[in-house]
Image 1 (cartoon, rainbow, N blue to C red):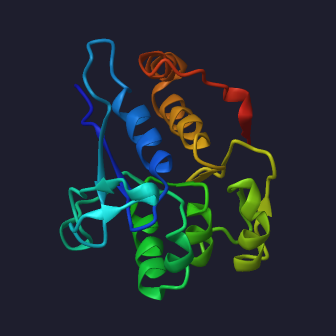
Image 2 (image 1 turned 45 degrees about the vertical axis):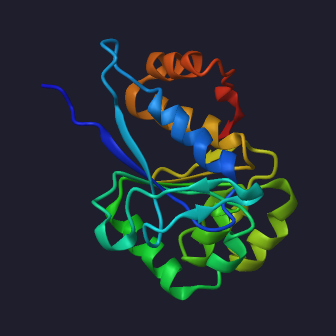
Length: 202
């Protein structure tokens, strides 16, 4: 019996970093069975369905807002300058925490880790973020074990990646973990992307 594609919701907001968002989006999009059936239903969502303006002026249209968002197998929080606002918004961090409890996996790219930390999800966990913001992450969650230099860090139900392009490596790692190395390798090849699994810190 064919398994339904896992849902991957990527949270977008004003000031989100473009490649943090579209890099993992593309990786999950490229993950297919040998018969080219999609393994993930990947989409963007926002606090509302209103147009979002990313860093550099790139605009994105969320498929869903919080009010009509379906259940998620995988929740992904990207980084970007807009995370400085998000970490201070209790309504957002509480929402992230509640959605994490209902999801199979919660992922972050770059300073998305700071949003997870502000939601109380990284206490006692290993994590990484953009190299220039390690101290900011520690200031939000003093009990986080920051793995400096790691491309991504897998805690089981929470996986964090460092800056920008590292989100692609993390997404490929998730694909490999869920569907095997061959599927991840095909996805990377479809993107013509070099994938370094040894970049992981367990």
